[in-house]
Length: 311
Image (cartoon, rainbow, N blue to C red; front, side, top):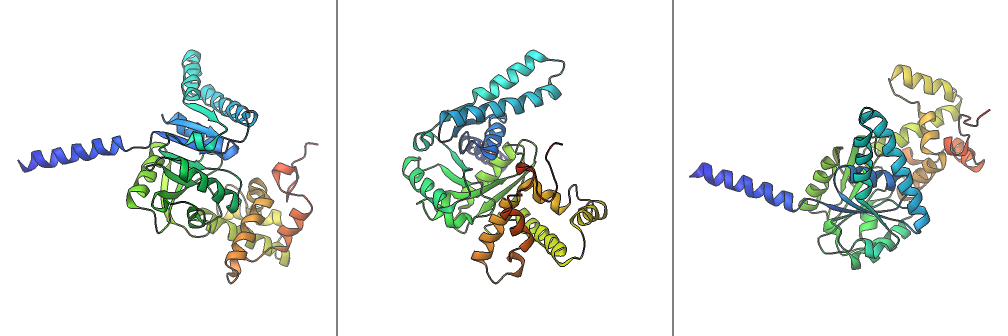
């Protein structure tokens, strides 16, 4: 009898979990991160609504997703072109687009915000969505530098608010940081972790601290590398070579900074320095400020610490 009871309880728990699983996802922002998140969510069987300001932006976002999927087809469906076509069609069929963010969340289980890193803009968005979304809808931000808690206060659902920090490029990077604030309920946090696993990501749990795990370690590391160059301790090329060959890193700190964007690095560091002025790790870098002021933002501008302009 006891065994039957335990089996029944397990069966009920499994069924309940499946019924409460996140099925419909609204991604706010059709940029590089937003379109990548939408692609992976649709690939793993979720219904996705992707939101941006204009249909033109959304058209480009969907074209970018299709191009990304075609690269997958070349690898996985080399001997099955019809299967590849169906693969792309099925995924794109699970992605709809919308320019009205309030309308987009009407039937959403989860909202993932991936817009500009401006806390006032984010708070205004979530305040509006809070009135439009169903009570069960979970809100999350993909911010890499702003405190989740500072965004969540714009809503009346802080217990259903957390962070989902994906990494670029989203279809390739396997990590997902699942962030909780003190008000995040266990139920919400568990659902977010389960969603990450359903997206085939390896999840790590973290609290709402500056930069979470990866950026909290990565940004001070890259800034300290810049300070070494500022002091004349080593050249930036030698620092990159040393970290690649001595520490086994795939990129040195200066290559990585160029890839991330020097303006992005400065934005993160300036925000942390303002909020935590007593922390020496967050103090500005004169070298970083100089490059950004000169418009040398890294790979995206054609020049940063390295030159990316075609000769």
